[in-house]
Image (cartoon, rainbow, N blue to C red; front, top):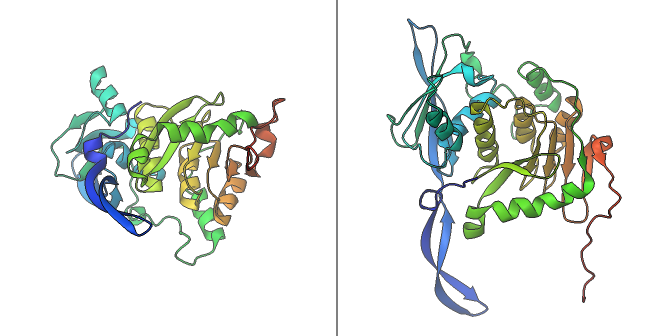
Length: 316
């Protein structure tokens, strides 16, 4: 498993560090934040159209995966067969799934570096129908727009993929172990302290994949984009672990990827809990090494015979 290359995901700086009243210069690493424009080419073969649909601030690396994951969670892509080609200026070792496609010699997806910096263009297959009215990230409402949660859930029903019965279970003791595994794999976070992470885990606690980004939603989009390129969507046998809180948008993305269980180190929002209940996603919040809350699907958390790890008492 790779994380974004250090020379792209972080930069070095010299800062003045204060310890009490004393100060001294010290080297520091900063997480890189740059804009990424996502474009699509769509329509019938004889009349293709190009449209810029989003500009997002992200940490460079896994850019094509981010764009593909974004299109999946917007309901534009369903599987890898919907993609005719991918053009990006930034294919590198961090685009693991694209590298695997290129190495396989398949002609299913054409890869190209012919694109401007900080731009990814996804050419859709001619059979993909595009609703241009829904291309500006507005098919659902966010917590900042003041529209009721009921409207958001109704909008989700119109775009979410068919869902099978949720049969994913995980042992409570396995859940307790996941935050430490996530943190130990966050290479860029350890240097900068400024990135969010999202990772996929199996029921046995083995980490499947991890992505980091300055944006929580970007980290999840990168994970889902990699999974789609590998023809692994829907991810019905994986748990999504979030390094921060679980917002409506992140639960929506998990839903679009077919993920049956989500755990977050932070709190879920009320609308995130509503989505989990509406679509029967197991949702865990405040996951620490000795406790967690289950907001939906507690019957799918197996109570192992081994007690959960406990923090040592103060003074010991």
